[in-house]
Length: 297
Ligand SMILES: [Zn+2]
Image: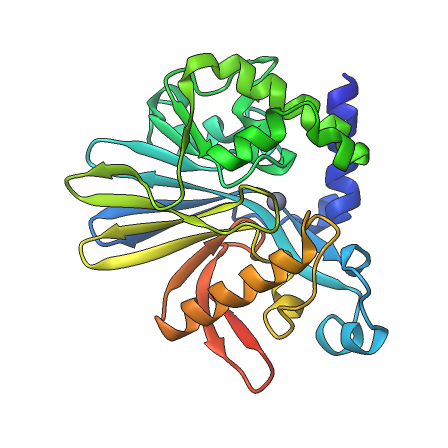
């Protein structure tokens, strides 16, 4: 009950969510080569500019004149010939029965069809949806996170560095605990999942958290980069990748990493899929006179 209240307050504080801001569309289908990707909104809302560190009022006026930037909590489902893979699990935000309800709506039998869940990092808005009523929400899935991320969140000493995040550490430990030996780790650079029609590779994106990971999906000559939390407000941080949110646990490293991936995405004309890009969370990045610009699909 306390956890539910905490999550509600978290969603409210982070997004300032009110019922009138919900859009009716919450899922969208894309193809990447031979596989299908579902973008699933776990929450829709707007990012309040108060979460950005040292934001100059003039800069805010330029990129978010009303003090808000469209955002979301997105998760992504990758459907291949042999696997059904979730990229992050949301926080049971929009759907009374969590993302498994969406899975049913999109023609899967249900949460039991999900074979693997790749976790970009262990903040609550990415892992709370792994559990329902203290049990596994995805009974047959392996849960995979980077070794750095798991070691950090499960080490009891880490909370001393971030004492105001104690609830997050407790929650990560509990959720990983219920997956037991089905919660596994990978190293940066590993091809984490591979099938005859696709592969998913883990790439070092440290900064937002100590083990933050982005994933490159390759299939049939096409690529999609799961962008995770490299940005929290597209209208502000693409032109100004130097600006961090209070959620960025190592702000200097987060800004360097953000800039690196914006350069890469623009140079290689990558399609990106981000956890907090506005719905459907999928788009491209272009170089702009100042910084970059995000173009939503
Ligand atoms: Zn997040």
